[in-house]
Picture 1 (cartoon, rainbow over the protein chains, first blue to last red):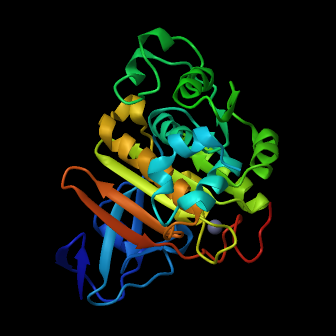
Picture 2: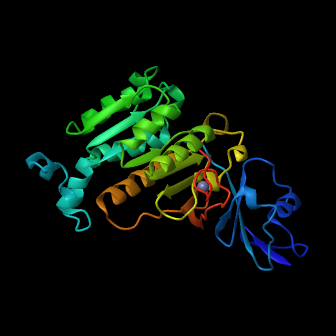
Picture 3: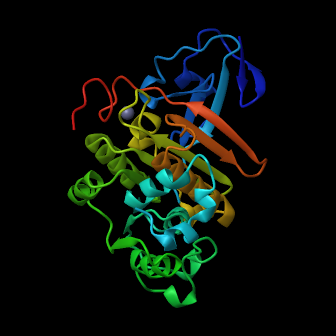
Length: 66
Length: 251
Ligand SMILES: [Zn+2]
């Protein structure tokens, strides 16, 4: 299936979860957050949230500074 | 009631039909807590003092350092080594001598937070670390007080407005404490105007909330990418298992 990762289309296996996607993209364990179709997915939901063809994924950084 | 001085000082607000006398009066009666007087808080506090927010509570346990001066316009070379909340209070009193300003020269702990927040209509999270942000979010939800969260690092800014009475998610739904990145402005850097822009967003939405002008984007995370000059908006739903705002809160 095709996912749009931060505006760039990429091919992935069917039925991937958010956790599996982050692993596939070699994202660091800390400091990353995810939205699917412009809705934030809480970290506790990452392993249960299955992605579908054409989902738009936003990877963004956890920012706590100021 | 607004007096003659107020009519002069706030005339540019009063001529706006979305604010007018009633909105300015609401600003005058408002009590706002600003936690953190760094790059976010010093900008937000400057504008809220100027706007005539009647009572400002400022909390910060840090001292002004020379590395702060590129992005914290309330301070100057003479402020170095002094407490930020106290220095901010002195400067703000010059900008607007007609408002009440209280400075807490310490980082508020959980019990202090709860007490101060319960007296306020609105809280601005202008801190610089995940633990403080989680504690402020939990205290605001406990007290039912709206919260405007700002954050910035490098060329990135984030803004999130939270209204505990509404059904959107909270800061704990957005970030788990263990998602905390190992970086801050001190070890990663930040471009001064980026943090200033986010602090201004906090001030702007505070003025809108308090006067009733326009709509505050509650429950929407705003991401600012300064390198490409773009804002993005993401929805934030409740995490059903959230210990702060979820169905079975366990504070
Ligand atoms: Zn929550």
